[in-house]
Structures are given as C-alpha cells and as structure tokens.
Image 1 (cartoon, protein in one colour):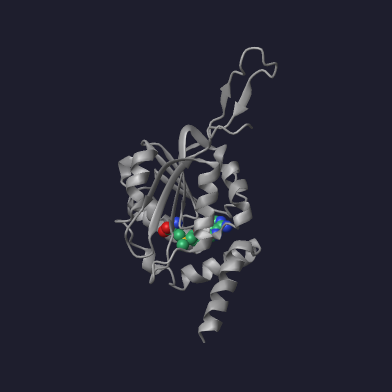
Image 2: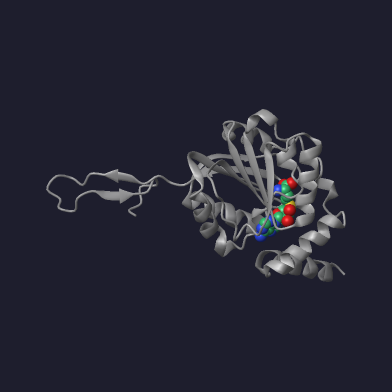
Amino acid sequence: MFIVQRALVFVRGFLLSYGPMKIKKAFWNKEFSGGKWDFIDETSSDCVYAHLEKHAHGGDILDLGCGPGNTANELARDAYRSYIGVDISESAIAKGMKRTVEGGRANQNSFVCSDFLGYEPTKDFDVILFRESLYHVPHGKVLELLEKYSKHLKPTGVFVVRLYLGDFHTGKVKPRVKKKLDLIRYKYDVVESSQYDKPGVPIVLVFRPRVAKFVEAPQGNNQGSRQLDSAGVQA
Ligand SMILES: C[S@@+](CC[C@H](N)C(=O)[O-])C[C@H]1O[C@@H](n2cnc3c(N)ncnc32)[C@H](O)[C@@H]1O
C-alpha cells in the first residue's frame, strides 16, 4: 500500500512538472474545485509577507502560480500598488478574483490564467514571486525561466521564492528542493535567505540577477578590460 501511494505521488509530481499544459491544467482544476486545497485559504501569518513588504517598495508584484489569491488578498494593502497573479488553474483564479472583489481590492489586483512557463509579462516588477510553485518547474528549466523573468525586474527588483525545504512530518530535507535552491544560489545574488523553524522548514530566498563588473586589465597587458560577473568569474 505504501509503495502504491509513493508511486502515485511520484506520478502526480512528474505530470505536474513535465506533463503537457492540458494535463497540468486539468489536474489543478480538479484539485482546486474538489476542495483539496481549501486548507490553504487562510495563510495571513505566513513568513513570506514580511519579505514581500520589505521588497515591494509599495510597487508592482507578479505572482507566478498564485493559486487562490492568498498573497493578493492577505498582503498589507499599502505594501504594493499593483499585483498580477498568474495561474494555470481557472478554478484557483476564480477564487482569487472573488476574494479580491469581496475585499475591495479590484483596483489593485488582477489575474491571468496561463502556464507560467509560457506567460509573457507586459511590464516590469519590483517583486516576482514564486510562492510554493517552483516545485512544479522542471529542474532543467529553472535557470531558463528565471532568465526570462529577469528581463521583467525593475533595476532594484528581486525574485522571492518561498518553498518548504523539509518533509512536513520528519523535517528531513527534500533533496530536489535543495538542489533547486542551490542552483539559484550559484547563479544569482542572494539578498536574503531565511529558514524558519516550523513544520516543513519553510524557506524564503530573495535574490536578483548578478550585475556584471568591468575591471581594467593591468598596464602593459594587451587584453583590455575583462567582464566579470559579481562572483568574479570571467564572463
Ligand atoms: C501549492 S499551490 C500554491 C498557491 C499559492 N502560491 C500559495 O502559496 O498560496 C501551487 C500553484 O501553482 C500553480 N501552478 C503549478 N504549475 C503551474 C504552471 N506551470 N503555470 C502556472 N501555475 C502553475 C497551481 O495551479 C497552484 O495554484
């Protein structure tokens, strides 16, 4: 029984990351409309909000994999000017919109139903958030996806990734999550990395693209200037 359960969890995870868009959409719609995710409807004490308030600078937020609009409706109103939530599930988006209208935030929040692997933003943001959604990006696509969205960060903008690093019951680190976080740390400038002592070991990583530095080659050396990334590695 345990083996069957593990196999089903694996197949679900595989399809939600690598499956065609139609399958991913159908899965998520079924889970949201069937009430499987109702337990995340109220998360106002989540650790991600302090980071968002700090980095949004009262500006613009893009939330990739926004689910039922928790961030849109629980983040302090004056912490941001505009919010766009993107999700593959119409059922999740419908919940987010309903809460937005009921909460009187229709002038601040908007939602788009799209696969974030293919979504093309039409403006730049102070914060681009992946809250509990980076699990569903195949490992081999993480850097490509971040590179694409990097082009839509304002000069002082940051990515915020919030994930559970550990197993909810045992706290044991999940290797696949750790591998994704290590990849980001290797390629991006980490601004904050906060791990919380709570079930599932929530972690919030705030980071931005590395800024290339130019250094003058020593006199007499004919190579001219070299371009280094901020880790000092020649580009
Ligand atoms: C665990 S839920 C997290 C929801 C929300 N961010 C939160 O923390 O409350 C993951 C969300 O990611 C969305 N999602 C997964 N893969 C996606 C994709 N490829 N494109 C857009 N949304 C996706 C799902 O529909 C789901 O709403």
